[in-house]
Image (tube, rainbow, N blue to C red):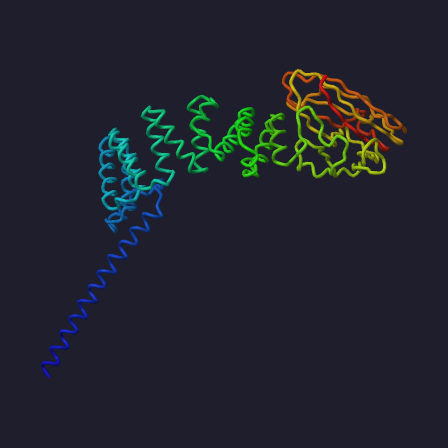
Amino acid sequence: MSRIDTRDTKVKIAIGVLFAATLVFVWFGVRWQIGNMLAELTSPAQPDSEAIAGVAVSLAPGDPLAAWLRASKERENFSAESIENSVRLFENTIRLSPYDFRWWIELGRAYEQAERFEEAENAIKRSIDLAPEYTFPRWQYGNFLLRRGRVDEAFAELNKAAQKSSVYREQVFSLAWDYFGKDAAAVEKVAGDAPDVRASLALFFAARGASADALRNWNLLTQEQKAASDTLPRTIAMGLFSRRAFREAAEFARDSGIDPEARAEQMTNAGFEKFIGAAEETLFGWRVQRGEPRVDMTPDSAVKREGTRSFRITFKGFNKPEFYNVVQVVPVTPGASYRLTYWIRTENLRSGGPPFIQVANASDDTLIINGESFPEGTADWQQRTIEFTAPENCEGVYVRTARLICGPECPIVGTAWLDEFAIERK
């Protein structure tokens, strides 16, 4: 009986020891998880992050994330003592996790803050060794070299970042653009000549109003390479158009398929033979502002001067003071002289403020010249001519309908047909 009791006692002791060990294991595991969770959920920018960092380290002293949070907070104090303390804390983070490239970057930044530049460079280079295919370490190294005044080395490293990542590409371009004083050639040298980089560079220049540089880089691509960036030319075209760089925008609009016929010094769909869609679907085609209940505007296949259709405008008591409802932007050369011709036909057209074709400066929205009023009453097809000189600040003109102002209640009734527009340089 005593032997059985002894055996039972040993079993109970073993179970107790195992239970105690389990509790200890669970306790330390829970402590580590809580500490890690606190570090992971806490940004160094939080007001209470320093206190949380202390708690996280006490709960999980072997967690590199908690150690990093504490080191980051120490670095923010900016005193000489705090800077040295942060270096030691980041070195401890490395000891806890020596193969995580992120901690080597942080250690490099701490060394640089402590003016231990050789150690800083070695730490950042170690991060590149650990993550050779990652862009972020090279971005950090390039910026470090730039701060040290080693410009050629810096941009050689930043070029590698630009080649690998479209995300960092824009940042590299912006850095070079600012550093070299908006020197496009210097930015291109940094960027390199890979096709996707060239395409991104065209977009970059377009966004900054460097339209000629955007177009030049775009035209360095082959047709196949342009086709690979199917949405990019549309974005560039719209950006250049909004900046009123009309000549360059026309080339991108043509390549993107927005306006396949777009050309400088040339009307698009001049005879209204092609479909006219919504105004927002074109940049250099006819933009027709529909939705006015007292005007019908539509292509007409029954009445035409040449081809298969004209454009009909039927006024049903329209009495607004302006009528810019049919318009096309034509890229022109500043200072050049032009001759615009078109054909007009009317039927029962009457108003004290008749409509006409107007040419305006699309670069600053100022008037260049008004054409003759549309024939009153009924008139067969007749050609009209408008001669004008583009102002020196003018890269594009509006060719549009307008009307004479004749008071608040001055309706237009009747129908007009337009056809066969043409513009030529004199």
